[in-house]
Image (cartoon, rainbow, N blue to C red; front, side):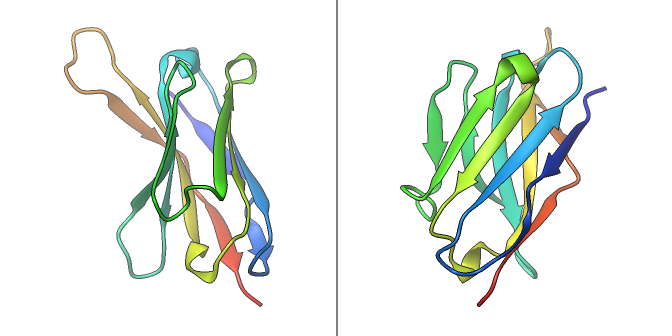
Length: 121
């Protein structure tokens, strides 16, 4: 069973920065696609960014150029550097690990408990 814990959330003013961290247990981290999602109050959970096993990064248009995702496989840790935060960035941010087990056709998703980010004057 994979478990991971997000940290680094908090309250920041518009234009500020935060760095989120997700540390995972287990031995499948380096073979997994890692991603960040967020869920604002009253809205559906939405994808923010992902990074492949080979380090290829992808971003939602709403955060492109402001957020940076990175991973440290030696530490089983995923990061999200968030710069120039906007009020619409207020949400609970979730770390996602997607791993394709042998014999399966779809990867299995593992989720953390989330960390709150509030962007407010």
